[in-house]
Image 1 (tube, rainbow, N blue to C red):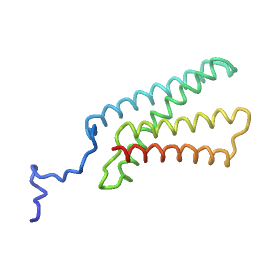
Image 2: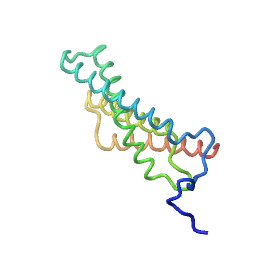
Image 3: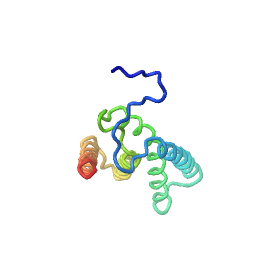
Image 4: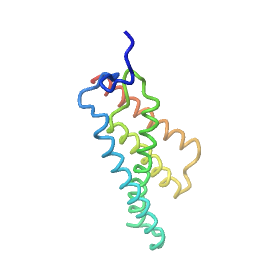
Amino acid sequence: MIANRSDPGHRLELPRRPGENPTGEKRGVLLASLIMAVGGWGGLAYLVITTKPRIGGEIWLFFILLQIAVTGTAIPAVHWVSQRLAPAHRGAPLSGVVVRRSVWIGIIIVTSAWLMIPRYLSLPVLLILMLLFFVVEVFLRNRELAHA
């Protein structure tokens, strides 16, 4: 029997994992990412404009604000990529996975900025750092999928 797609009562339901809320938590995470991005980039701009570059509390505040700004900026992009590349039989990953992947991106950027201070950052170091976090994410994701 061919289903009528114009019928609002007929929907193709994908099997959901326990605890999955595909629409409710997405808006909250995107709103939080907007707040993080605006606050982080605004704080970084204020810090760079008003303080002199010194080694001390300012550099740690710079790293914290950079982490918040990059994570908040990466969440919508990671969410979109995760939605597009997710297999059809599994559906899009939970918002917690999207946030975790965005935090990984923020950690890579902050670590790269920290390695630029003594001039240790090079392309091979950056690629190894990215590969390290990619492997950790693959292991974490496989463990989550095995226990779901």
